[in-house]
Length: 95
Image 1 (cartoon, rainbow, N blue to C red):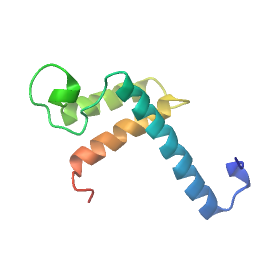
Image 2: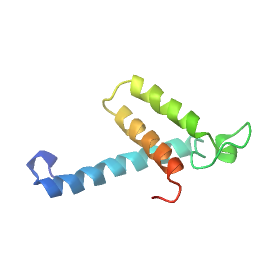
Image 3: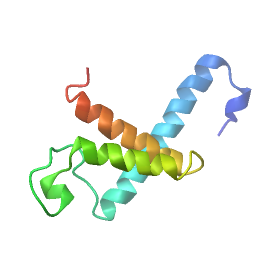
């Protein structure tokens, strides 16, 4: 894989987004395998998040908690994933 610092602007933009998206997806896949999920559904009661969903407020709090852990390493992927979740819940049609 080519070093991103040697790329031109447009190439670095594309590669950077693709690499980071891949890391985000891998983390989401790993967490789903651990039983996490349901971020995309509104909270509908108590119990399993996959079945009942979660609130936007809960996602925002999880984002804040991860930011407090520091903006380095693998935690940046967690922060990005929570940003993605909150953004999608606020823009359910992608607009």
